[in-house]
Image (cartoon, rainbow over all chains, first blue to last red; front, side, top):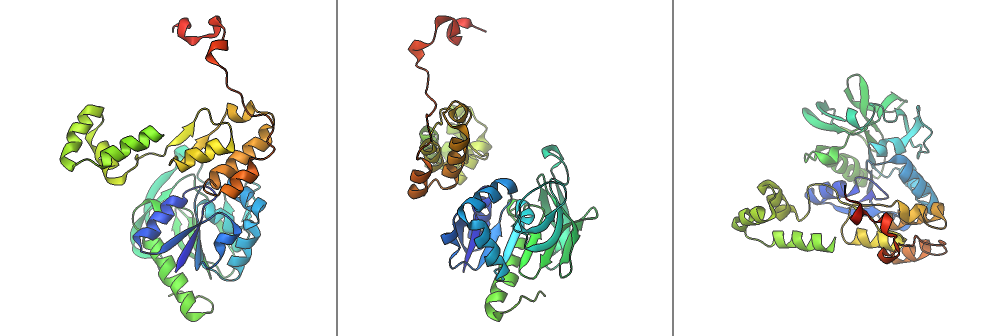
Length: 201
Length: 131
């Protein structure tokens, strides 16, 4: 199994470290040919505009869109969640537009308003997990077929839609790899067994 | 950067018991020296800044292990800042891909030219100005 980590900009090295800890092969995705043969994709945190701009120039933008539309499992964290979303309310950002969520960018404010908290996440952990929000977005509204897995202070921060998992925080920074483990076990391995749509527990 | 890498490798190669002496020598907190010994890198991100003028410069700093590159005058004092900025951004992302590096390095116009220390006028030298 190979999991691709989008490596245009941002926290891709930290995601690669998590995959290494979980004994899964990771591959940095910088151009279209890197997508060949991967079983899942992680869109890391970082700066969504910088990522989208470079992806548009080398064709990775359209290639990722079609890969995700063909049900390739994808996990987007922070800026990755922004890239997945169909609509951004407060700023003009070009996104892949594949997931039925409406997102507010920099929703908690500036760098000084970054914070960590704890909360359980449905399916992923009944025990509260540490969640690190860095200039994070949150989801304002989800469409039909999107399941909300976690809310913090009344705002949606984790959502699931078929092959897409979106998180507003940075699960790669805490050293607890429950989110990645869920992504691998229940969204990638399951997909490979069923050859069909993903059914969540 | 080469010096830093070499010093980090030196710390990595020490015996655990030798770290106390190394920390004393470096006048650095012991836990930081222990961190570098264990992880082979600093506990903070390391950005390269100063003197970067071409995509090749930026890519080399990334190859040496920097986490990112800051460029100021290298872009703004060049002939075509917009084009050069875009090229350096791409060079940082694709720092290990010689084909892309060669492509983005083409036709960038005049690069920033450094100022030779001997051509700086006496009254402009910080050394004599004091503080």
